[in-house]
Image (cartoon, rainbow over the protein chains, first blue to last red):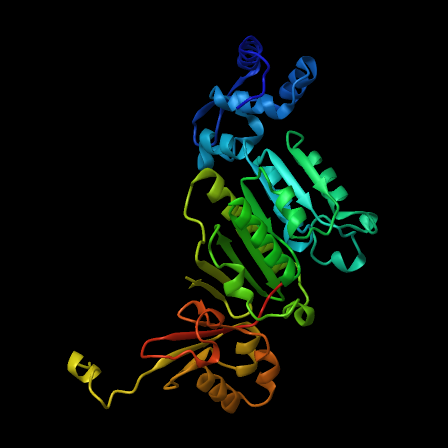
Length: 290
Length: 96
């Protein structure tokens, strides 16, 4: 719920939003009362209220921030509001996590926890969407924060430049709705699953190697990571295959899709099912893992 | 077409489907095969026989599922197989 200190202020905000809203037609002819980013920014500055709170109040009153008009046909106002009210934690900001935060910010997730202790290096440039030559040596978390603010200034950010262990993870995800596993080693993935289980949070797992990738959504109590990696060492075959750009983009997109499903209730998450992708051999197989 | 009676008679050979994925499939040169192996160890031995020593390094640390369950949660390599079971071999992927 909006954190307005009193109902009078809330009514005032609603009234101002209603006056600023424009009649806009979507491509299918549906009509919307929509608010431009500029008008929301000006109102935010004038009233000293966070942009996110204004967007949320608008959605609750049936008005649409214009930036989401191409979301609404699929997500609806209710889905958009659920995303805005949600908090998602992303562990790892490399090939998977960089694109995951980009897409979550564009979709309109309200709060993003971003965790990675690493800095950008030249060998990231082949695939990591947030990397660029001018960022080499900079913390991935810092660059990700800049990127998210540039994309969607309403997003509340919780950046942590640390190599998180299980106990850190438990603290970082405390009031989240969903957690994304975009990590790059097996022991950390076990840590994250245990942290999520202890907080009773769903975890969206993704992993890549060469032209191969996998995605699975793990709910508290599911064996999940144990079913996939039991008996494995610290790293997988990616140490030999490397990671060209297309696989992380596909797997990250599918992970974000899982997050959207969990938060909005639209569709059915890949629970107890591992989606295995091998683009070299055109395999897109869902394996039951109960 | 077999009749149900034929399917249950003594001469029917139990067939298990072996599925190979990713780099394991690449070295094997095929998607998998059918076998009459009665446990996981026998399937592994058959894989080594069929595909030669090169497959061994691909099989190290691979995930083995019997009907979607990791054999670590069953009886390991002694896990028994029966008619219609599917045994899948995956290499671990952990890149992010």
